[in-house]
Image (cartoon, one colour):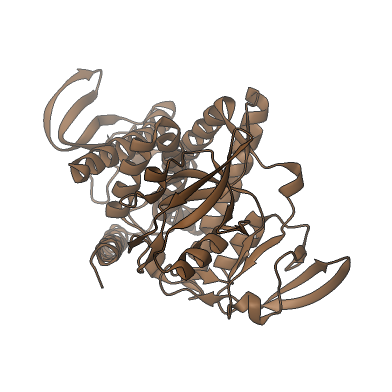
Amino acid sequence: MVIFQNIWWLLVLIGVMILIHELGHYWAARFFDVKIEAFSFGFGPRLFGFRRGETDFRFSLILFGGYVKMAGEQPGDETNDPRSFTAKPRWQRLIIAFAGPAMNVVLAVALVTGLYMVRYPKMPASEREAIVGHVVPDSPAAKAGIREGDEIVRMDGIPAPTWEDVFIREISNAGNPIPLVLNRGGRQIRVTVTPILDERTGVGFAGWSEQSEIQVSGYVPGVNAARNAGLIRGDILLAINGQPIRSSHKLNEVLTASAGKPVEILYSRNGVRHKTAVQPEKSTVTGEERWMIGVQLEPRLIMTRLSFPEALRESIGRNLKSATLIYKFLQGIVERRMSAKSLEGPIRIAQLSGEAAREGPEAFIGLMAMVSLNLAIFNLLPIPILDGGVILLLLIEMLMRRDLSLQVKETVFKLGFVFLMAVVMFVLYNDISKILPG
């Protein structure tokens, strides 16, 4: 049942994003008076529809996204129609190709703006500094001499970094030394940390985590210990077995040491402190077997609402940071500082879609915004058959001031298709290998 729910919500997620993407192409093509032969909701054989002017608006068999068919769009399409795609100036064709990814960016910004107008998670002013809350023993951070309570005041030339800045540089710099300036008890200390490549996640790992009060943001599927003990979303975890908790790593460390024995958790709910006994459960949901209580954690946040201008500004900033992270991620893979195993495909996205939908509209909309931004950036990669490949060929033709031959275009698009299918097969293999035991 869960599998079918995941598939359904994946179809909803991807379907909306692809339709928005194709609407971008459609509106741009209409603006430049390109003849549009079909606008399809879905792929495959036509089921039903209607014709408006020269365009066939159709519903097709596989309701998974959609496409726009423009006259003369594909290499080899022969047409003398002055309104065909190929008859238009290259700069107009470039805008039409760019309009699809641009609409995905607009969707991501619009969704996050709407979320922030309803519920904006704000970090308390006292916890915005990048203070180390936990250091994993024998990790790169520990070997560099970093201690709990150290404040990172400069990282790789960035003054007063946030933990988001720290995270981006950590995961994208496996094997690369990162210079740090720490504030330890009023003294400034210079150290260098070199993240290692985490084979499980495929990204850089330094072995530190932020100091912050942590609160329950949700439950881990299949692990019911915390739920059975009465912990709910919004509870702030203060201590476990008498040891203060200022990071998720500290919680995991104590749970590992408990070896399955019940643990006592001190937590705060609406300002009132409570204690509860929790029986840890052994799980492999993270890819390795370990003791868990089944809570998803996040730093304590203050929830507020933003006005439209404030929400729009914050949304643009959030999406710019996310785009930077995606770029760093792709750059890390190309430079072999990150593993391609960290790429996730439709199976994993289906799991995330189902989990987000079951958690609520806010989580699902947030996931849609994130995936929409990823789709925009992926489509802009200079791979023939994608929008980025079309844009690249148009730019080459603009520099050459002549068209590439039909044979060259067909060959390039065939190679692009083969490469894209290879990527699809790889991410599918990645997804399946993460599900299968061992």
